[in-house]
Image 1 (cartoon, rainbow, N blue to C red):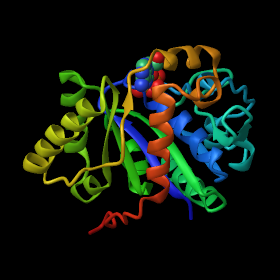
Image 2 (cartoon, rainbow, N blue to C red; image 1 turned 45 degrees about the vertical axis):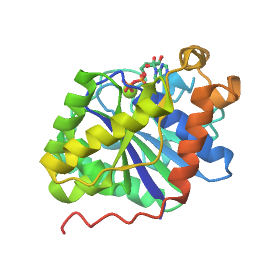
Image 3 (cartoon, helix red, strand yellow; image 1 turned 45 degrees about the horizontal axis):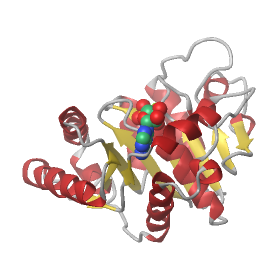
Length: 254
Ligand SMILES: Nc1ncnc2c1ncn2[C@@H]1O[C@H](COP(=O)(O)OP(=O)(O)O)[C@@H](O)[C@H]1O
Ligand SMILES: [Mg+2]
């Protein structure tokens, strides 16, 4: 079974999709097989960030018009399999609990063939987020060093069932320095421990870097176009720690 890593945040625009695509690429560079699922069904756009053109996406599976294997595409640019959440035509349907269960089961089955599954979860807590957090070994909670981002991240942890809170890994993005990341992790982690009985961990951070926007505009992974940039270095370090992490989450029913 693959290690399942999901990427979550309180609000949008904190870098979830960028981190999902680029962590997946960094893990693939380590010769691991990687599946990426664009689970941000409302704002699916990972395909655009990596310049992937797909004929099929998860809706085709939900609507029974394609098998799960059919909706898995290969991205040359990040070297991973990708399930797109964006419809090539038409709008994204709201999934029912039953449909989400089908997606979750099919995803878990497909993940058996990979070393790592990354899920771009989107912002906030909706029913589909909890389903996918339940599937995850590691939940990277992406926070920007801004009060609104931190408040919204707090609300997300609060909305998670207690047993799932142990999977949270505080992941500062767009920090200026390692010290700022450390302070954010310690202070926010302290609040989560004190008020939400969560035991958040930390595996790394990504600094703010102008190369990120340039890489996204080129629709390429940052380690391809700017391999020596600070963000690329931070992402590869974070990917390495995700790979060696041995944490075993408590079962959801505990
Ligand atoms: N480490 C970073 N440094 C600079 N800009 C970043 C960084 N991470 C993300 N960004 C910027 O933030 C924007 C939003 O990123 P995105 O991945 O789409 O966020 P989300 O998926 O959380 O909504 C991107 O367009 C990118 O330019
Ligand atoms: Mg996104």
